[in-house]
Image 1 (tube, rainbow, N blue to C red):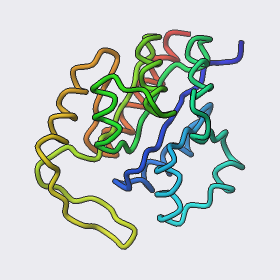
Image 2: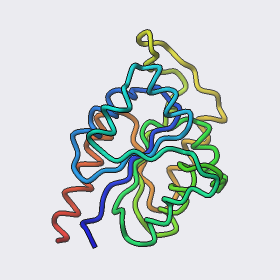
Image 3: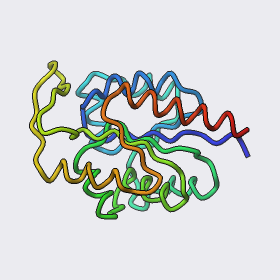
Image 4: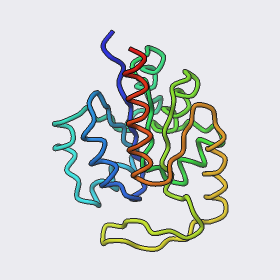
Length: 181
């Protein structure tokens, strides 16, 4: 078997999406999974998927059964990252709903005891975020913040609150894996 890889999912959140993608593209042995909304949002931010595909493998949410999730059972992935993650995806994950490629990936990662690093878009009652036209203020609803709080309690899940924390968490995970070898 080849060296296990990192699976990275982008959902429909624009919350520092360019910075997340920029960091992800610095990594080796990574595959990108896009929800349908994630694909749309990347286009809104002017990201050329052809350029991304030229650098890494990209899987899109096009099949009802999400066939790539089986790769977790084969040891193909050592870590799953969802960054950025919409409150919709967080809510589904918290409720155990695995009806899309990304929610299925999170579910199967957990069932296979593969650690997940999650960067939710809704992390504080009042926060600055990115939109295609620049920075804006948003005010997440109580239910969105409750979802973020609940996913923090899930096994094999680390929640980060910024791109800087995301970079640290991913790099710590990769360093840990190198020490195991």
